[in-house]
Length: 124
Image (cartoon, rainbow, N blue to C red; front, side):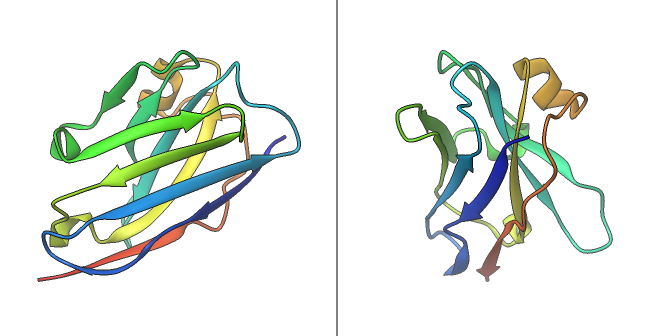
C-alpha cells in the first residue's frame, strides 16, 4: 500500500483559494490514476476530481471550472487548486489511487487506506 498525506487545507473566506497536496510514499504512483474526495460530517465520502496517469482530468459537476487537479510524478504528489471557494466546499478532503480514472469516479477499487485528510473551512 501507499501511505497518503493530505495537506494545504485551512480557513478561507468565500471566493478565496486553496491548494491541496497529496504526498504519496511507500511506492511510486506514476502508473496509477489518482483522485480527490471529500466528506462532510454525517455524510458519505464523495468523489471530487480524478486524474489519469497521463494527466487527463475528470471533475464532479459542482467543482468544474473552479478546481484544477494536477500531478507531479517526479515528486509522487498530486494537487488540487481550488478557486472561488463556496461555503458548500467546507469538508475534509482526502486522496487515493486506483487502477483507472473510472475507479476513482465510482470510488470502487481504491487501492489504499485513507489518510487523515485535510480540513477545508469556507466562511461566508
